[in-house]
Image 1 (cartoon, rainbow, N blue to C red):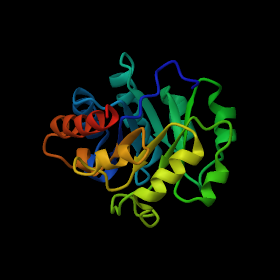
Image 2 (image 1 turned 30 degrees about the vertical axis):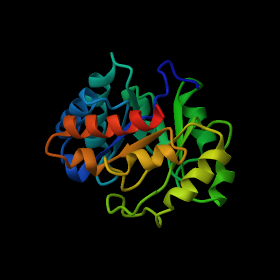
Image 3 (image 1 turned 120 degrees about the vertical axis):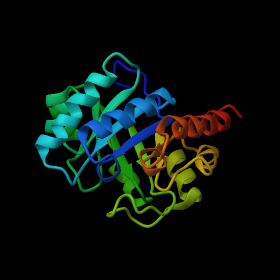
Length: 215
């Protein structure tokens, strides 16, 4: 692990541009989720222009700067650099993690999405953690592949040998199943961003995760 902050993937919030609507909305959702026990916050807003994304990034960096919560930017290295984010998460079609490392340096946290046995081969030495999924079907990410299921989650988590977070259609009811099948944590989008009370939603999911981790 190359970051000054501990890599705790137990409850990984992926902020959704459509549900949060504005940079201020993202920051407010993140604030409540952190109060509920969220350990990582990712800014993901592919629908937004860069200026709007950067506004959100500055707000999130300010919110999280004195906490142990990691601030990750999805895909955009420039936004991560300008805002001082802790790292970047990339997908299979994004910039290769080795180039991300060249830009961000040795202390950055770099995550990679892995959704198949074939994609295990794309994990290189510059990857700090992987996101496995979508575990369950999801409408939040329009370009997400078919659900991989708990069986493939367990296989990939064992074979990769890296810290991992399960993502895709995860909520309070199925979070513990992901942990029992090898995940170190769960990445949540709509179950927190779309909740009436993001703090309570985060706390409920975090409890389910912690209970499963303690077994």
